[in-house]
Image (tube, rainbow, N blue to C red; front, side, top):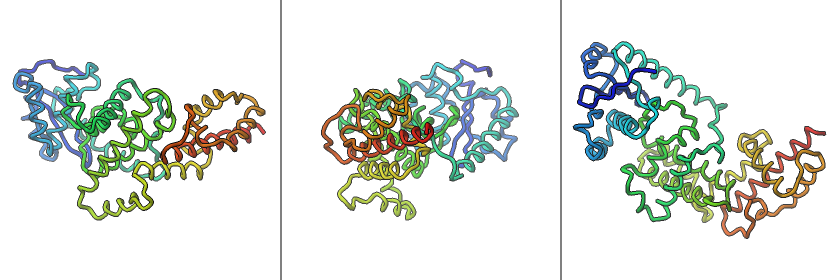
Length: 355
């Protein structure tokens, strides 16, 4: 494990570089600044936020508002926030004793960023399917707080200096849902990235809501999804870019649908047209086992699978959820249709394998 200094008297600095979409932060002795000046090909900027004598918590909060448009400073502030709040030192910005090692690490980080960007451009690359079992206690707590914020009319969660959408974009949940894995990376957000990320996270929370509907706390996922999508729409409307203005047309309210109704309908259409090996259909395999077993079907036998198939082919939408009851909105209607379609595809595929 690299050595990490604990001093806070101003002898330690944050060193930050910026790639195409990402800011990388590191820590080291103040004396490294002179050595780094020799490397004029790399724009490395320094910050002394590590100094807790000067930068008390209240001062950092004020500084965050002052430099909110400076991605370098924000990366250093995020790193210092993590250093003060996260006990696991492996999740802190890395420590370097000499300039050569820091330069080498920064160079590697920029190369990996470029490689990963090219990799994600591949149409075959898919972001992970996030299910309830993938969520940590901290993820659930954050989602609950966002839902509470939305239900309170955006007037709660005052103890956070950042709005809830920025908290979730920087969270472990976001890294899991969108396939990010480097805890040291302080992402340099731009408005377009935020819009697309919020839409993606909203869709994933809606997917989880479809799984959890009727269970304790399930409404958190719907309310958080609605909040994040509304924030994405608000931000997108602020972007004066014709390319993204055309994207708005895809979500126009042509049939009186709200954005999440449209999303749920498109998701349902996707599931009904997909094959059994589709990522979302396959991701419902375990949930299908639990649900149909609870309904009384023995999925370990061919007879049980055929009985489940017969039931699913006649099942009503309101029977697709753990908590049965009348369908009172379009979102539940679409999600119920998607659940029945997915479970039916999974059961049919298993029958074919046995035969």
